[in-house]
Amino acid sequence: MDMDAFFAAVEEQRHPELKGKPVVIGGSGDPTKRGVVATASYEARKYGIHSAMPLRTAHKLCPHAVFLPVDYEEYSRISAIIKNILRELSAVMEDVGIDEAFLDMSEYDTPPEEISGEIKKRILQETGITCSVGIAPNKLLAKIASDLQKPDGLTVITVDDIDSRIWPLAVRKLWGVGPKTEARLKELGVNTIGELASMTLDRLVEEFGESYGNFLHEASRGIDDSPLVTHWEPKSVSRETTFESDVSNWQTLAKTIADLAREVAGDIKQRGYKGRTVTLKLRFSDFRTLTRAKTLDEPTDSYETIRKTAFYCLQKIDLTGERIRLLGVRITGLTGPPA
Ligand code: TTP
Ligand code: MG
Image 1: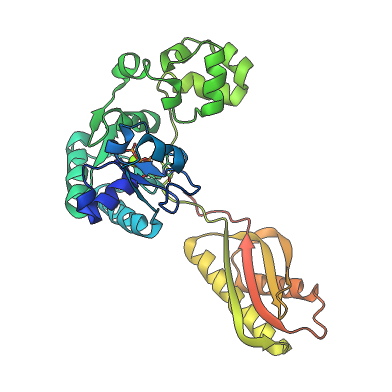
Image 2 (image 1 turned 90 degrees about the vertical axis):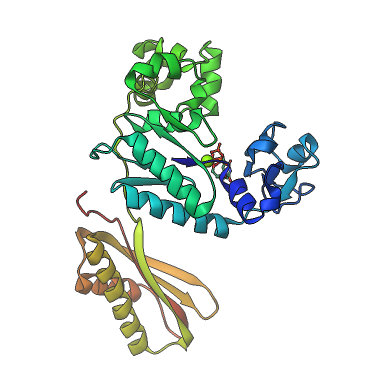
């Protein structure tokens, strides 16, 4: 599922007088200033305006377009409403970005066309804006399918459609093919996904290396086994405290470190993680900031261990005559929980 002209659609929804006009969202919304187009409404795209284009260029292409600044807060709010609808309709969702998500429908008896219709209806009802859905046996093909009949599209691609519907498309439509690869393939006379599929694996590996060569070989045939990523692993868990007034009292520092360590340990334990590196952060009254870290032999979620390690780090800092403004405890090198 991918929303249609997302930022522009949200703006049109809250300013209905914009509907049907060319609308360009980007930067501060002033096309005489620097900045690039975040997105353009389908009306504005008729003038050749697209994402990542300088606002000034967009202004030249369509001087009477309505230019608006980016309001991430509002787009995130609408995005959250949409993701909640999707979560209700499928237990397995990969949240890809502000306006797209993958849903795994393989365990459902209801035909995916029917659930897709429901998704489109609910999103329209609750936000007033349209989306496009692609149904396919894997993520690679679903992503392409979602783009084939925008806006307000619903496109089904099966393995039997690959040669007729995927192969004529430009290589750039393949997820994982960026402008550099596109340019290199063009030099080799390869413009479409079908032409890419006709290259031998050996040739692709020679040109792009083992891993990416293999990826291109499979992707051009519509092969993709990548699972949905249903949650993001946190990179670290941390807590910090800024004192109301700067502290030099050892007891207060010790108690604060213990409290922070307890919160960090509680947090990772609750989420089923263990971490290996404990970092203490310390900011002096003059804003000089230091960190000291220690990596343990074994991952831990133990409050005692995290607290002791944070103290060990504190002892590496010369506190003579210093006043402390902020203390923080962080744990990184997280592992688990089992998928
Ligand atoms: P997209 O889904 O790529 O674009 P879109 O929703 O505007 O249009 P489409 O109907 O073709 O899907 O991106 C979603 C939002 O992300 C888009 O509305 C604005 C933002 N965005 C940027 O800020 N910069 C960019 O370069 C792109 C591509 C998107
Ligand atoms: Mg979109």
